[in-house]
Image (cartoon, rainbow, N blue to C red; front, side, top):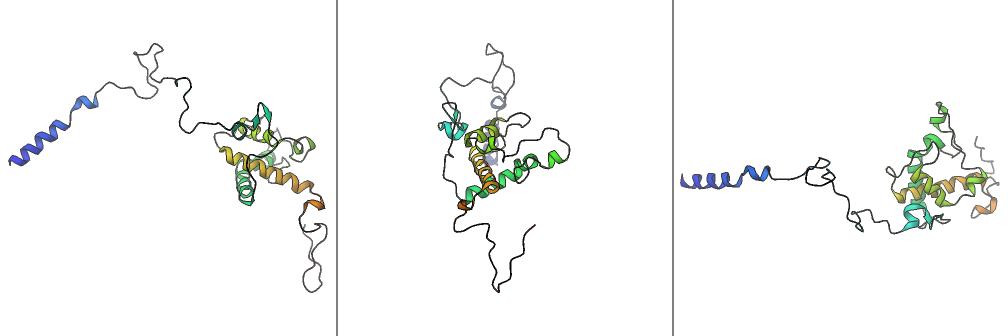
Length: 196
């Protein structure tokens, strides 16, 4: 009985209401303490919020000293292209279509502002940093995608756009190991059926 009474007294002492009622501010609530009336305080000058240090200008902006970069900031391999294709198909193909000609389903369903084809000379000659900047900040009727697509994925999309451009304008010398104009002959001497 005494043990139960001791435990009860300790338990009541631990549940103090004044801990719940202590002075505090909840996010985005007004404050009479600060002169500007806001409980949310601006960052101290020179501080960087966790996860927002963007010390590689070219990687995070597609530019170096306000000039678009000409090279991707990391090597491109099959995994990067596969990721770029996946992200492109999700975010870009609804307007730009899967080949990059600018006739995606959104356009086919009546959206009036058709994006330019990636295969026009102006975009084939554009720096990779230009594409990254447009994906990041938007352009014309195209919204920005910086909140939806991480920087590395934006670069993967840019690499895939370059692959799409090359696929429509490749020369025989661009194909390693052979001439793409020659159709391989299957065993038995029959000509392979042409694809339509």
